[in-house]
Image (cartoon, rainbow, N blue to C red; front, side):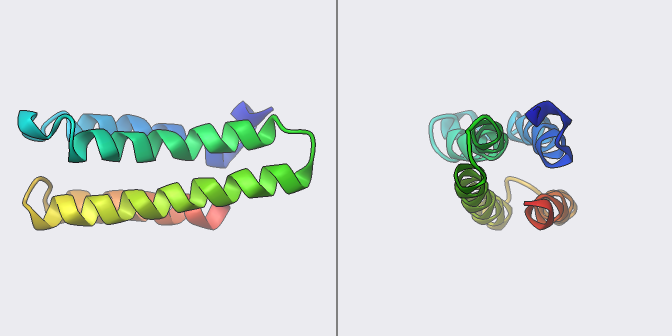
Amino acid sequence: NYKELKVWQKSVDLAVKIYDITANFPKEELYGLTSQIRRSVISISSNIAEGAGRNSNKDFNNFLGISHGSSCELSTQLIIAYRINFINKMVLDSVLNDIDEIQKMN
């Protein structure tokens, strides 16, 4: 059951955290960086769940790879958000630490 996987649980927690953070982004970014960041973070847990629901380890590993790619995409987007002053260094470091932890579990 994917809901019992620690990596899935942590990635869902990260999604909630990201939604809280991006709620403070400028409204004109709702369909830009905000949307992109939210899609990336949702993709992490969604691909873990989808892969766990497949019938083979090969399929599961493939979806873990996609999930990892989404976490790399998210990291990049958060660095951009930091550089354009949407988030501060403390928030960036905290979230990058969460992403690193999830990547190590994948």
